[in-house]
Image (cartoon, rainbow, N blue to C red; front, top):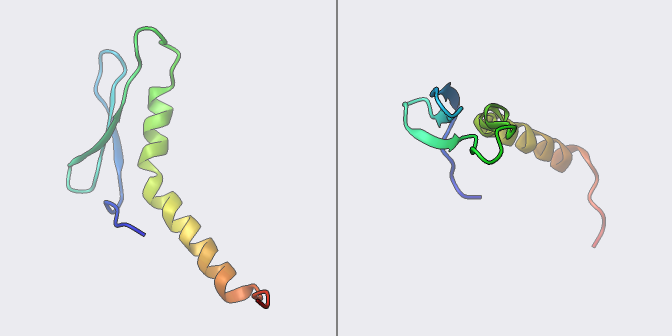
Amino acid sequence: MSAHTPGPWKVYALGYGNPHRIEDADGHTIAGATTYRSNPEWPAAANARLIAAAPDLLAACEAVLAHWQTQMPRAEQ
């Protein structure tokens, strides 16, 4: 698995046009989410929060995988 930028990641609303910036713990920009004028209903804030949750979601997936690998019997090959 490739390395990723460690969390926590935080979301900052930037103002006009509903843009959001996602930053790592050191304040570096990881990603952005914005609302385009052609679709003002696009959920930029919700998408930014989902992106910012990526480190926690990865940790949860890794914990489930580790549990399955140690607790579930392996099929004979």
